[in-house]
Image 1 (cartoon, rainbow, N blue to C red):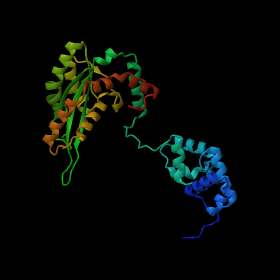
Image 2: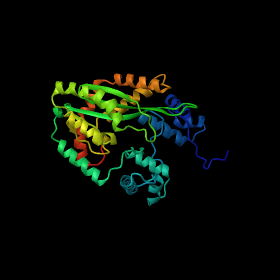
Image 3: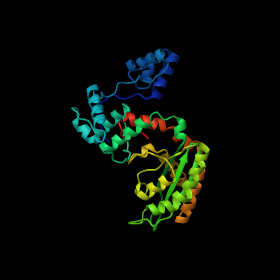
Image 4: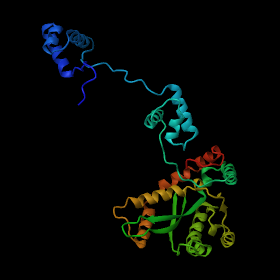
Length: 329
């Protein structure tokens, strides 16, 4: 162990307490210091501090001066806000003061800036942003009764987490929601893979004719004219599907391309997958996953669906504020 760099030593709390106790009993702080092999002046200072503050602990010290001044901190925050995807190493190298990356990280955290993983969102071209903006301007006057008469639909993949020596298993589901109503959920049956995805024929045979049409007529009788929303998947935009919708006199609710932010069923899928992940015994086969998905759909409360549909007005305002760009939704 290397020798201390200075002869000065820190007096521990036990020694200070004994000095104070001896001085209170005899009134002689210098003698108390001699008994503890402490300089008499130091003993007097310890005793006087006790009389003034009631304790023998040292006052808080200033510590080592900070390496970053206020100018460096402002420059660092500007760089972090201007280049949000810049590495901390690059921000550190741009500072005039030589500091470590850890120092920069601590300073940003103290200012309320922390690292986050960027959310994956679809790329939006200028044309798509313009479509989003037009959609938001058209639907800004919508009131809650208008959203109540809109049927939101979507497809979603549900993956089965692979275990040892097991390949990934998935199912594709179609679902629809309305305010105060959780529509049917269909586990789609199709080959999958290259050339085996969902097409217009399977969409009609498994969704439109047996599931959507009866549910739509029921909601139409209950609430009046109901608008039907679907995304821009190829099987939705095909001529056969458009003809089917026209022949059954179903008004379509416009939905811009690459716009999951504008569909309230997207967060419902997240709730569905969360329920599946929390199962004590995850399904290990396609049939078991099929049954688990249907049970999880039944467990989703209506209040959750109403909350997301009730946020449609906020979604529209968020798109307007983002000038057609991505939103927090």
